[in-house]
Image: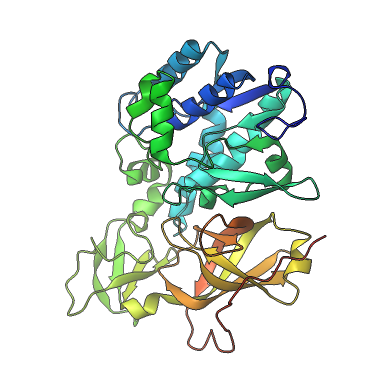
Length: 397
């Protein structure tokens, strides 16, 4: 007999660990599973020195959030534990975040937090506690496939979908993870919180960079990687000096505002040259990219990645969390992979993620993704490519 978490056995005999951040989403996740009879254990991770951020709106896993998670657990009558992950979080997320900016990239710390901390260390802890699954409040869903494995699919609420930040989830992790909110909208979740009598029902949503107390990410970069804040020149595509800057970390590819230079036409950041500490600017058309190379590619589609892309795989990709998936081709082998964008894209930045989908909208399946190593703008890059009318079925193993 399968229960609502797609597990064999009775809910009362099934232990579930819920990652509780203190926000409304994870709190409702815990409340839902408790109401369905599961043996729920709540765990909150203390991820950073929360003293300065204790009462700041949008701070995730800060002091107030731990307090809120504890109160929710007490109301639900479930065990609740706070685990000190500060050292691990600093090493895996904060240090990497600063190093990435110092190297001219634009990182996405939430991806690394999910991969290394929540779905790495916390998942291991959940197993040690005898839990059958780890449940989170992410807006994404998983579905059982005919072979018994699980697929990651987009949330029903497209405005809240968090699949972009979870592309690095492995097949093994997916088998152990559950996302009870994947079929709900945010208003529905808040209404459930009110029905359960949770004080966090109207709590402000957390922001992306949870560990930045002031909201200025450059404060952290300047402290950990001061070289990224050294002054340098702003130059055009021909190397002509147009102005000066106070640190490469203040800029990202595609940026237009805040350049501090006067020009007859709009200029955008098209390149960050770390070696020379130069910010290179140019016209909008210089941002157009047709080819992206990837590193650290994770594949959760059917079969083996190299078999699936041997002759080129038609799919859809998202190169930023706020952009819609667009048609593309994925090619490569043996750890070296390249994405060709059928329609091209602007402002693609190294360090961001390129996430693979089997459809452009709706409850699309996530096939994996990788981190952008480089983006190449070249005329004629789409020659011979045709916008796919449908996505080819991934090779089944």
